[in-house]
Figure 1 (tube, rainbow, N blue to C red):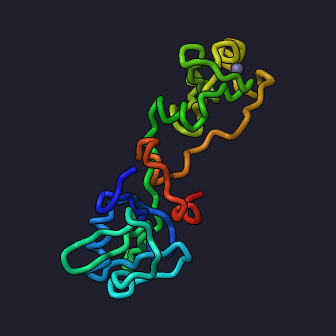
Figure 2 (tube, rainbow, N blue to C red):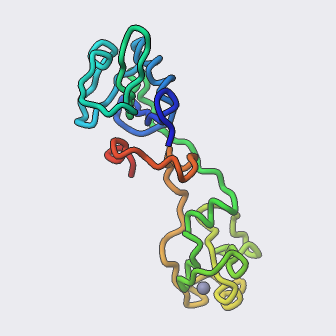
Amino acid sequence: MRFGLNSNVLVLNRLWQAINVINARRALTLLYVGRGKIVSRELATYGWDGWASGPSSLSEDRVIRTVAVRVPVPRVIQLLEYDRVPRPRVRFTRANVYARDRHQCQYCGRRDAGSKLTLDHIHPRSRGGQTAWNNIVVSCIGCNARKRDRSPEEAGMHLLRPARQPRWDPTAALPPAEAPHPEWLPFLH
Ligand SMILES: [Zn+2]
């Protein structure tokens, strides 16, 4: 967990959609210059003056002491001039497909250590199937061999869940130790 000015702050756009994670130093700068408002646990918004004068009974690790002011560490900031809907893409990589499918065969549900699992083209590549989010799933070696170069329908097999481009999660880029703050949860998923 990072503290003080290095704390992670969730960034919302004007439509209250999570778009990024930044540190508290950057969030307070955006607040100070009037480009953002801090969102409190109660979902109230504060400009610099309101926030710096302190809504709170915060624990010591939640405030920054400077010579002149004592400012609560924000957890969520809303940008005031930014209403673009976030459309970042989760990069299409082997590791991300495994993560999306939770290291689980999407045909039989088996979870094995990496070596027993492989990636399957739902619509076979030999017949024009694309290597893309909506056509690649994790499959165990057994299901992969059974399916051969057939579609799931032809092989009489069913996917556990449709293969889709994963939704972007601004916290996905953070290492596990940087778990989302409770204040973020209303804005994730
Ligand atoms: Zn399987």
